[in-house]
Image 1: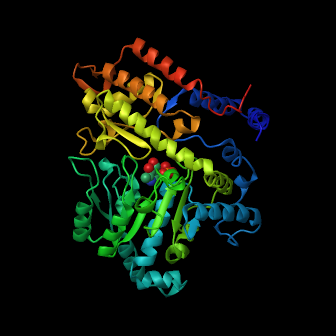
Image 2: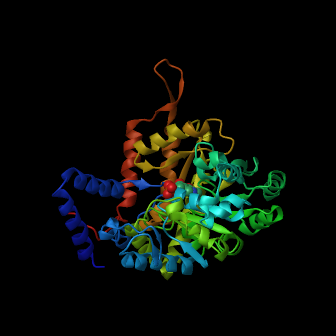
Image 3: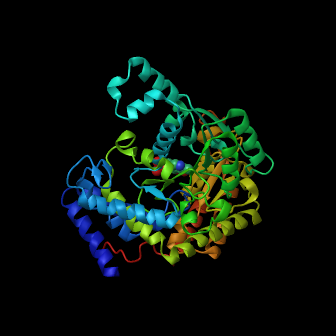
Length: 478
Ligand code: PLP
């Protein structure tokens, strides 16, 4: 697309929106300006391409299309069929999966679809079989009661939240923790790494129906071959949630034992993190689970979002291009440069480094909570998020960690030299911030003291770092 076409497209779209509600148009323009100016180190965010963004603003948004390609509960879905089939085809080719379900609206939804598929496939329930065979009228109240009890009492073993697992892997605040009897595996307290022997031991003791691997805040590769062996040894279904690192799988940085697709029974992902697509989710699986997965809508999900499936097709096509592999590799080199830069300056990192797209700084080494560090960095133009570290003494709200990731800055074009400069800025802020006190003079986990001159100077240096790497250079909103 030419520079001119992108500018015209976004300008025209804003002009039309402005004609109805100018404040929305202004907020959209302000969001672009903010994103252009901030050093975005949120590990779960990225910048989708103009083609991906533009594929979402159209008439597909108006369509209902419950069901699957060629088998809809609504008439007139032939064009939705086209984009859904294209997105699924790109996903299958990209990840080498035999089946792809591209309807989930988000990562959480993809996980719910996967849980449903595994429960429906694995739970021995005559009532469920009858219900699935549409013999619903033959079921008594007692059958329904048994069905709910059977489906709701299954076991899940996933990575613990403070070791980097995700809420949807069985934790109480999430529906998964209410549906499943959950147990978690952590990491080795000395190394911060997954101890596969301990996982195997936990699996032997607990005998889960589902063993989940995948993470939001674990800075290392996971050996999915070993995890599959553990699942097989206890008859568990092995599920991998690759929401964070799907881009590294797509770009063939994670191959062999570290590529989840050949090893897992079912793989879920988001499409908007390292994969650089629109906000959304996806499920990949083999033929055994495909029928159950395809019941995602209307079983678990509302009507699919055809405009987002169109954008998924565009983003997945982009991820199949050779330059995406180079992008994925640069994400990891950048994360490693950031980690090295921080370590050289004295920071403490969980696991001592990274081999993926994220770095977890234990900011207790700077005498701060995650909350204080996050805000001090934000004051200095550096956008990160606080995160628990293993066995975190500050809990999930204040935390002791800062999670940083490189997918977004790598999309902008920043490289390893800029990552070292970024490490210097982060270290400057964290080493010059001190814990503050509450109104009563007592130590506070939220308040902090940072000289505004330091924040301003770091903010200026962060902006200078970004200047040679304009975001959406072809988009000029005038
Ligand atoms: N799974 C993992 C591992 C995640 O990190 C996240 C999001 O942070 C999700 C699932 C949920 O994704 P979404 O926010 O799209 O529902």
